Image (cartoon, rainbow over all chains, first blue to last red; front, side, top):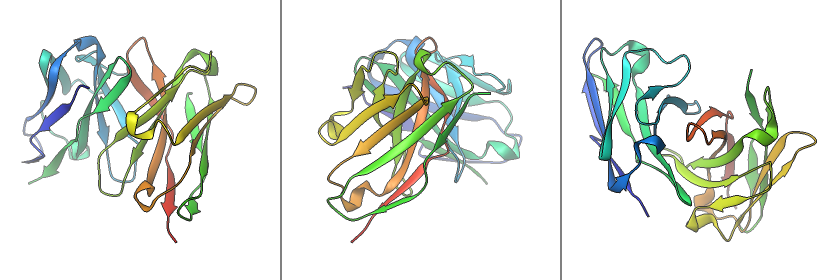
Length: 108
Length: 119
């Protein structure tokens, strides 16, 4: 079973700053099957990135994804007020589709 | 536009069952899978299970394998998730999500159904 570990647990930043979120897999995974979601309080998750680096429809270009093997990164180039939320990575593979435990991006 | 609308809040007693509905619209129901994800209060997302409305194939996370039943009604484009033998730690928000296997991600989500288990 692949385990996804996200770090840091919480990221305290100011609007305009760059956010770098990490998702590490317990074994090598295909980058085609790594996705990122954003969730705001009281809302359903929203797909941001699929295939480790492709932005979903309507997602601003300040969001970017990268990585391969066991290490994947979500970068928000310049935080906007609406970007403060919890971010989850997810691996689609085999018989299990796991989520990481999430990274909260909070306003400093 | 693609929309998933879930059934309303449920309050159940321990040992009971709950059946959550997820009605899809705006796309061909049998062309995409439906995943179910739960989120306990203040916790992260936990993938539970997946069903293909096309052929009824299912996948389950091990911890839910014995207690969850997934079904679909293609005539009404509705997916159902039944969770049996409810416990207090099943209290959570339950989401359905459309799965696009081409992009290997869930690109549309229901609004969530809160299930509270309490004696």
